[in-house]
Figure (cartoon, rainbow, N blue to C red):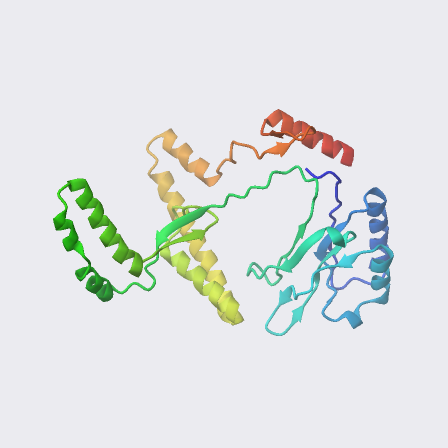
Length: 298
């Protein structure tokens, strides 16, 4: 929860809009500011801010009148022939914005715009635990070199020990020392600790090629692999779940299949600070905090 509510309007201005669109838009902004002076205005305005001299003077005057600051500085739509900044974020309290950027994701021909807003009295409890996996990296593994180092490893030291537990531990330590050199253990942050069962190597390869050609700006190849990736994923899901339903011998198995298509949310709620500043994960207390907040907001 935030101590002071913000107003976050979402806007789309069609490219064919006439100049009187600004007049109609000003009425909406006036209404919003009368209710809340903290505005974060986000949307596709189809006004290229990479060409500041070509902006309608009427629009610039409106921004100045209502203290709306456009904080995105990079191109948000990139094609083989053009690069434009038409997706904007306007804020009235620029001092509360910690940072803003354009995420270079290949979701569509528009990149998403992002910002981080400072909240000194935020009662949300930030989760600082990320999902990570550890695995051996065999990317540069060379079997010949590995066997060569293994052949000269000092396994003969084990002969001087008599206790079996000590011997086996020494063997593991020597072997792992060689293995760590050629296939080190690395830790990686991931969205999930394991891929879904329908995920396969063909999907991984297609995704890799899609991102490769997007990064290189080879748009025809990128579009091919983007469509190819979607087709492979859809086909893999269809085959996996069709087989899962077909192999369901009992209602229990069938319900397991259905639940996997629509997984339930985590049972444990996020923690919040109540009005007394005490951390709670009680569902009733959390509902009361949200209810009071939105009642005041309305």
